[in-house]
Image 1 (cartoon, one colour):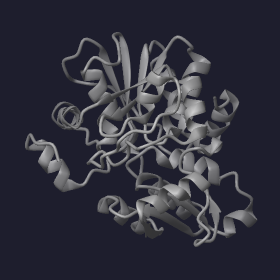
Image 2 (cartoon, rainbow, N blue to C red):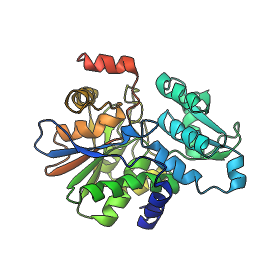
Image 3 (cartoon, one colour):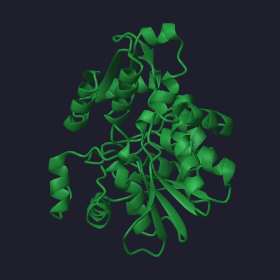
Image 4 (cartoon, rainbow, N blue to C red):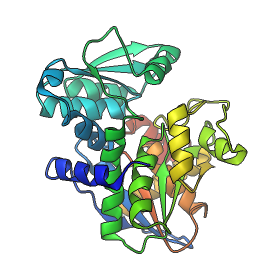
Length: 314
């Protein structure tokens, strides 16, 4: 668990630098009362700038002058590039071949250098927290405690706006978002359930909870590019099982349907990972009462969004 003190200090650092995103009611039919935490409204279209900026604000000036590097499928790359621009330093982002062009273009627009590598080399970079071919301080996209503390500020905001929250559903990619939020929520409201949500095309956390130990699963790439993987980072499995109440998974069709409903009912645009929590809530996997769904990002490729709005699943 990330300490409440770390998360509260992160909140102080980020105050006035990132958006305190709104918590709004979902306009749709459901046995639960669903609320949406709209992280897609951040300047980069996702929550990632919270953790990136919190970690980078704690670097020494000499470290910051070296520049920073991270590994990302897109959104963390934007977060680190955005923070680097704010702090006037250089940024390089290691991405897997095939990453969403919309997200890569955004990284470059923010001044970040994109370095494409095969998926295996990209995953190795994440496992080793290092990419020697690029200079700079490595900002781990998931398991850096200060990144998770920054993400945890979302949990503080949720409970400030809705103290009566019965459950919080959080998309699970590497685990930094769900662990950060759960750390904050469990510290302040232990009875509030916090569950992670993955796509069925790659749900190692769900299977690990079911088995009681870390599992490797078959993984299929999909339009839900910010979530789903073949395995868990060992550190994140240890943290996740200690602070989360469990994990569930939803289908690609359910995720696409949730994206459509967000647009049609609330005029909210979410990417695939950003709609996972709502998809789970609509499938009655979040329980009853007041259920908060974290809309983690809205950086979806326009062509994929058009396909979804036309009633199909990319």
